[in-house]
Length: 138
Ligand code: AMP
Picture 1 (cartoon, helix red, strand yellow):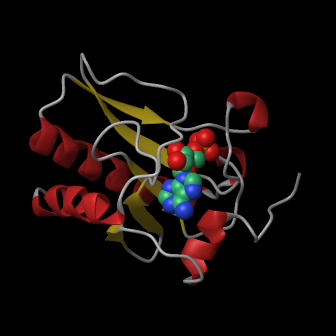
Picture 2 (picture 1 turned 45 degrees about the vertical axis):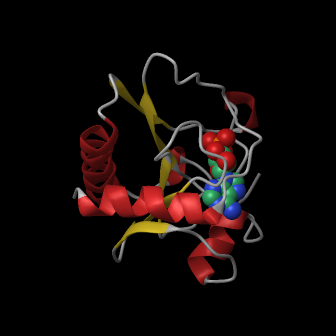
Picture 3 (picture 1 turned 30 degrees about the vertical axis):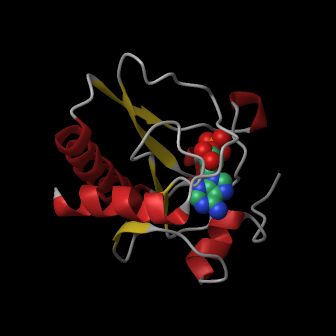
């Protein structure tokens, strides 16, 4: 399967769909997951059209890792979870549902039950508040 421009993250990158932004530079965009597994669930995507990690040019590696670590550290400060999970899926068989490469940053703690995917769309105002907490703790 080749890259399909009609995926929702491609539309977010082109400005054709909205997102609650957390961090952006020339290489990456980070934004709130609309169906969070737990409060603060954030996604980091490269500004490069690839469906998965296997085809990502290495020049993006440090930018994705920097952003992912920065957000994970902030999530740790904001929510004080016992764990932070970094998740990245390649291919439908691996559970991937949006075919533009993305890294999930998800806080984990006892009582915060993790499901592979959530089906509950969050209120954008709630996402904006969670995003601001993460941004304020960079
Ligand atoms: P994956 O299963 O790894 O492909 O994860 C895709 C993620 O994208 C899921 O956690 C969805 O909740 C999330 N998602 C889908 N549409 C949007 C959107 N418009 N904005 C933000 N996150 C989204």
